[in-house]
Amino acid sequence: MLTIATVGRRFPSGTEALRDASLRLQTGDFVALLGPSGCGKSTLLRLIAGLDQPDSGTITWDAGHKPQPGEIGYVFQDATLLPWATTEENVFLPLRLRGLTRTQAQRDIAAVLARVGLTGFESARPQQLSGGMRMRVSIARALVTKPKLLLMDEPFAALDEFTRHKLQADLLALWRDLGCTVVFVTHSIYEAAFLARRIVLMTPRPGRIAREIQSSLAPSPETRLDPAYATLVADISKAMEAALA
Ligand code: ADP
Image (cartoon, rainbow, N blue to C red; front, side, top):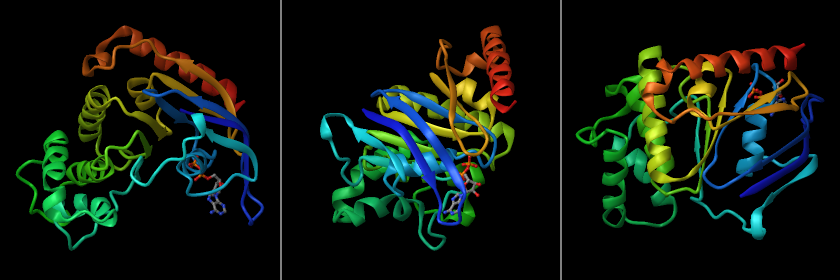
């Protein structure tokens, strides 16, 4: 899908956030970018989204494909919803920006809200929803344009552990059903091990890709109870310690 080749990013402030980062994304991947805070994970995600440009290296879409608006979905740690708008209106926003009327968008909005478990909450405003539900709205808003690539920047970091576990399991089901490619930024080894097929370990600033670990765990909620999950967490922890040394 996408090749990131020896990408570097130094901000005008002088901070070198990324150095020589290389990664290939295959269609259907679920990749976790894992590393401590400040190691350049969000910077790399923004570069993939085209929200920022690298100072060195290249990011190339396969077959010269340039992503069109709506082909990339982006979910932030904060749900970033319009506080005065209802669930439906918040999810409608990307389609409205693409020129669709509410009537044209209605079926897609209803389908995506059903898919994230928000049927019945169409008219609620963000302050009437729990943190987990607000994040579901945010995910629905990212999915309503049917993106090929879903970029997620620590979307569950602010949620309590029970809600986080539920949303993680639901995200895996979504990924299996929708077949889109996911790049997920996290500083949680447990989260990366549970969700991702490929765990990409980054070093502290300037962020570099230290190594990649493949997961063969089943993408399923039962994975948390699987001894192989504990082994994978231990393997990632050891590799992360080496990357931080
Ligand atoms: P992470 O997502 O791994 O926590 P970031 O990619 O957000 O890390 O940031 C990497 C480094 O770059 C940090 O030191 C951060 O302060 C710095 N940084 C991020 N964005 C900017 C910016 N726009 N201008 C200057 N420095 C930035």
